[in-house]
Image (cartoon, rainbow, N blue to C red; front, side):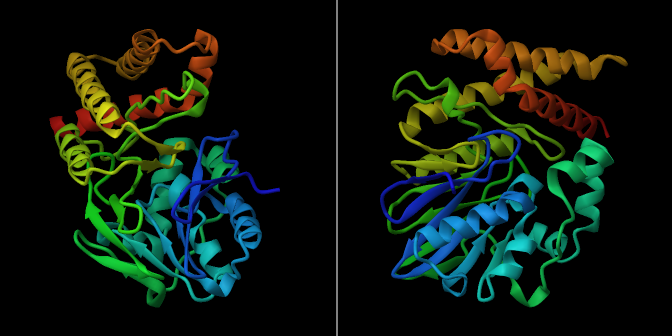
Length: 315
C-alpha cells in the first residue's frame, strides 16, 4: 500500500521507499482532475507513484506534468520509466539538465564515479531516456498551468547548477528539491522541525546557495516541500538555520583546503561534528547513534561535495 501524506491544496507526499522509509518523497499535485508529479524518485518508486495516483482516482492519462527540480538520480532517476507509464505527461527540467534526461549516459557515468558500479545499479537501476518531444525546458521565470493553478519556476543554483524551485500559485508554497536542505522527521521534537544543508557532489557553491535560499524566503511561503522529507513550516527560522549551516560547511572546507591524502576523512569527520553540534544546539532527543545512522549517507555525500568545491576553487 502506498505511504501517502495528504496536505491542503491538493498536495500529497508519497514515500518512494528509497533506501529507508521517509527518506525520499515524491510529491503529487491534483487540481480539477488533472495531476502533476514533482520529482519522481528512482525507478523503484514508479509502482508506488502509480498506486498513489490510483488511490487518488487519477488515471495515468490525467497526469499532465512530471516536474523535476533537478536531475540527481534520487530525484529524477525514475523520470523516464514513469513518463513511459503516463502517456500525456510532459517532463519539465532546467535547461542545463535537459540533455541529460534525453541522453543519460554522462549522468550515469558521474553516478558510477560517486557510488561505484554495484551500488549504483542497486540504488538506481537502468536509467530510461526521455524522448526529446516530451521535454519542456523551464528556465528562470517559466511557468506551466495545472488545472486552475500556475506553477512558476525559479533558477536556484547552489546545491546544483541545474536546480529550479517551483512556486505554486494556489497554495503559495514552494517545492524546493534539495535547495532548502534536508529535514528528516525522525529528529523532529514534537511539532518543531529542523533543517540541514545538502552539499552533495559535484556543484555545491555556498554563495549561490545563500542567494537561492534568500529567493525562497522572498516568496514568503507558509510551507516548503523538500524531497528529504516533505513539508516544512516556520520557514524564516529554518532559512536562518540553513544560512548558518551553509557558512559552517564553507568554513569547514576552507579549514581543510590544504589537507593531504586524508582530506576526505577530515571533511567527513567535520560534517559529522556539524550534525552532532546541531543535535545539541536544537535539543534533538534521538540518541547519538541513531542521529548518525539517519544522517550517515548525507555525511559522506556532504564531505564529497565539499571536496569537489575545494577542487573547483583550486582549478
